[in-house]
Amino acid sequence: MKKLGGIVLILSWLITGCGIKVTLNEAPSAPTPVRVVDFQGAITFIGIDGNIQIVVPGGVTESVTLDASIFAESPDGLITYREPTWSPDSGQLAYVRRQSLPNHGEQFDLLIYDRATGSISTVFSSDTYFPFYLYWAPDGESIGFLTSGDGPDLNLWVTGRTSDAKVIDQGEPYYWTWLSDGSTLFAHIGGSVDSNPEAARLQFVDPVSSPPSRVSFSPLSFQAPALLEQEGQLAVVGRVDQEAEGLYTLSFDGEVLIKVADTEGKVAFDFSPSGQYLAMVSGPDIPGFHVGKLVVMDLGDPQGPRMLPVVDDAVAAFWWSPTEDRLLYLEPWLAPEIDTQSVSFRSQEDATLRFRAQMYDPQVDQSEPLVTFKPTQEFIRVLRYYDQYSRSASLWSPDGSHIVFSAVESENGSGIFVLDVEGKDPPFQVGEGILAYWSGR
Image (cartoon, rainbow, N blue to C red):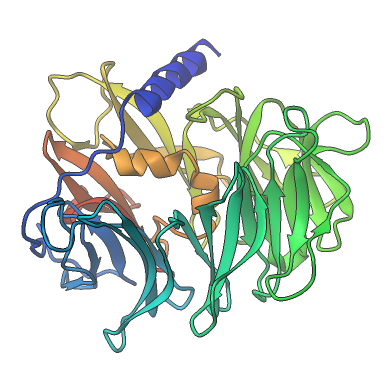
């Protein structure tokens, strides 16, 4: 626990002590891939010039936006882009445009780029509400997103490609997962009943008509619920009646099914693609970055979950492969300040924050190191909420053969790198940018 406590303190200082800072160039320019390679799907990323790009197989780059600018005195004012998010069929890309006008006003837009036609449509505009998290419904017909509200609560909006955006729920904090048909979402609102007894709750939300349906369950310290669609189950952390806290599965009717594991502190979790495994990180419940112990539960016997040996004592984030039960996880690592190499296969010693990516295979209970890198600030921002972002975005290629990550190259530059998870080749750069996601197809 001594190692874990030190890592948490360092990460909390780094997160709270430094803001997100992006260097934007005066004129946008398409990045030149360091290496051309064939891969499946496509990668979207926010470039160092602030514009959104797409890299397709062969290394060809598509420009989604071209007008990002840091010059507030320009006719269009300051323009920045955030939250690129693939649609489920990967044919469209939603993103947020923020424009600070010369008269000190602001304009916020949620836009959708259609890759087949190259057209861009605006599905939400406001001079008050700034969308900051996007999550497509599984059927691709609508998008959920969050904005601040008129008071302390956040607003959950839903907009269709051809229908007006509307607020369907409120609360703070707000985390959710869509059910597979896109007609209902399951939300965790208000945090823990221990710290927020009046507002903390779990509920099903119908985006169209019905009022929210609250679940009789006391949520504790976790963020996003997890969905196992093929078994009709949802995973949450909390307590039933006066029982000890734990990770439970619920039915789509809100009925408690089984207790998967005892828990303590703050917890993040997700099911593997097959549903046989559930990964869980638990650690100190303190403000800021969440780092904890990673364990994997074998759910092969639904009535008798079995905990495998501890995978790692200090894990900052994890993502299951989309095609098989292999787990990518990030371990905070500290590297010497004299080390200028941004991406490395070797272990490194204490000084500057980096992440060491590792691959875990629960079938053989073994981890293999993949790569060590210095993360961009935008990547660190997302990692604070990785369990929610993993519901709507992926670092994995669709076939599970590669991962994408953003790393600092130098004091003023950062790159988008792709890595073969078999570890046969070093990472290769596909663009200059601060954050990237892989398409689902």
